[in-house]
Length: 126
Image (cartoon, rainbow, N blue to C red; front, side, top):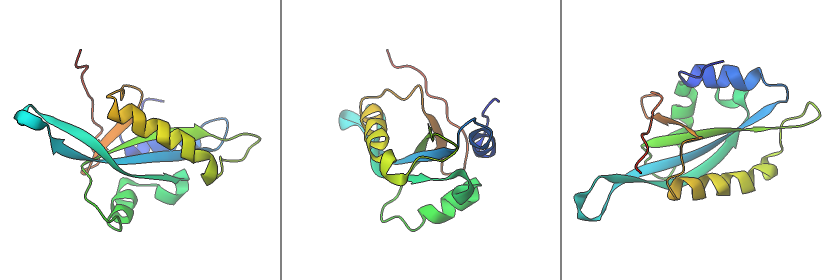
């Protein structure tokens, strides 16, 4: 299934062989020193079952409870096993890895959405 928007992401997560937990890293766009573009700085992470945030509107509404502004949210899926989704505690290490990847600019394997719910595509910088 091709992921073209948040709805297709949730649909894809629900169709996997094992139940999924969605991993979210919210980032804020910040100006680079010298005005040479912007970088995305992680500000908050969360994990949710697909049915907990089944629409981008639900994600946006829940994100209003966050103590900080965000510009881009990165999303990845984490598969469970034996017919059970991963426990929330099992998401800590993958979320740390996600943050590190974003900080290092290794975002090619992550989905990203802006605050309007538009799927973003990032070009390679090298």
